[in-house]
Image: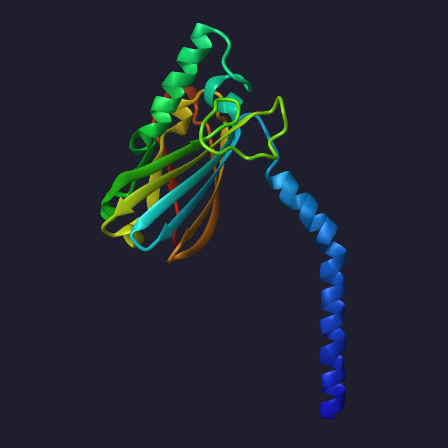
Length: 194
């Protein structure tokens, strides 16, 4: 009887492995699709670990400055300069729950088109991105239950934010949409927890 159970476990293990290998092309395509460059959408990954809150952002450059290449005119250069200044002042874009008592730490901006940081070498030409990592040092990061996000007010090209949050309470997915015109300049709350 034990031999029959062992054979069933082995054969079901092989079946699982075969299914996993068969799904590999789908999973790879899905991973590429998740990194797809979609105008109006940006991705935020929030990690709360120890005394830090780290926010990783991936966005088409168009969402941030209105074009996807190096700036050509003085007006475009000014637009880029203003956007970079806003991103470097990330504590104005992301207001973390006061219970966590966080202060802005290092900000890392990456964009090949803008010559910032070490950009993603696989970025297709003509579809430039701006990626960023915002680190916050906190006295009680685990107490954070929300972040008030001001990206819609700051960057008019952003219509949707897809977020993943990893915290001590668990892992969560959230989607934020651009608010109606009357609330367009108000922050949108990204919350998590049970």
